[in-house]
Amino acid sequence: MKKIILSLAVVGTLMSCSQDKTAYVDNTVLIQDYYKMKTTEARFEKKSQALSDELDSVAGEFQKEVQEYQEGMNRMSAKQKEEKQSELMQKQQMLQQQQQRKSQMLRQESDQAIDSLISEVKDFVGDYGKEKGYSYIFGSNESANIMYAKEGLDITEDILEKLNAGQKTKKEATTEESTTKE
Image (cartoon, rainbow, N blue to C red; front, side):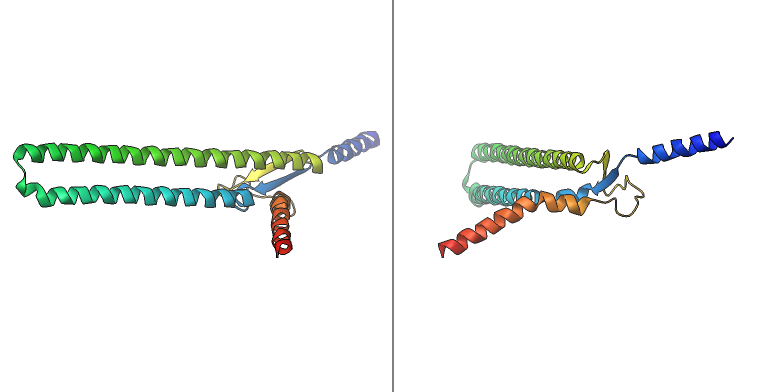
């Protein structure tokens, strides 16, 4: 009986020693606070605003053309009115298609950039896990796919600090360059 208890204790000790090292990161915080994501979002916000300004300008010109037609339609024959209305409708359709095409292209470009950053972060977390000896690093998000975790297992801030370390170095280099130029 003592041998069985001793054997169970040894097996239990061995099993506890071979437990996998695990942790988790908050995916949302990690991606949102990654400096490259912030700069990417800012870049696409500028592109979106430029596209909006361009489309507003084109729409304004079209609106002027419609207004000129409305002001002068009393002097037109029925055939001229019909031709001008047809021309304006075609132009409006072309403008709408152009707007949709440009918006879709911008959205695709943005999605590709964000997907690339997400892959970069995943690769970084994988390398971090290997370096630190983790067997698993889980991802959590607002869907709460991790309902409970022992305190101290959230390594989001540590990974985020290391991810953003390159940005701090770039900022310091920029500061040094501007100080040297003065």
